[in-house]
Length: 216
Image (spheres, rainbow, N blue to C red):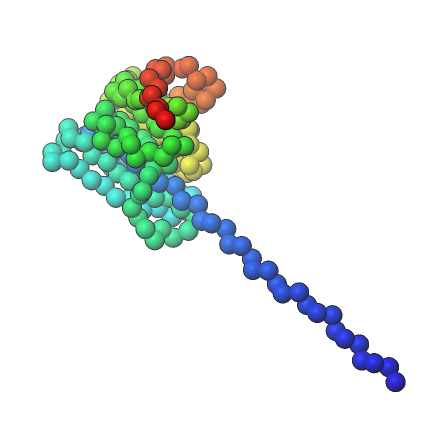
């Protein structure tokens, strides 16, 4: 009489590793009247509406709305944002020296600093990534200094590749006042163009910041 065959033991299934959701923290700062909040709104709109990600924004102002330091913080993620506050930004966009002085120490050591090179003279830690653009001067060349924030949005788009360029263009078009779309898209394209030039040649109109002495 033949013995019944034993069925082979099944090895236990390994638990599948869940991918860690990506989370990018951003702070944009400047003074009132520079369009800081609109810049944050455009970035958030591009990520959440045009690119299918998730984003939250929190804004804050100094005692005076115009001329005082203000900022907007964003969290961008490929999953629902459960905690909307930032700890240390991955991307720090600076349009004024006061804003830089106030928030400079928050930036992660491997974070990206993006700054208005005519107004902000940063002191960098060794190896820190920084990219400057004379966004106000570029906006003035278009005839309206007020669109310097849109120049900066274009520059941020080109430097970080946070979302596809066309998604950001759509966000600009749907976020600016009716009748100003052409001007604002021209400003956006100027910022993109400067980013492309800078990435090809790091010496394009970028001042050499002083390196901060690092002591052991």
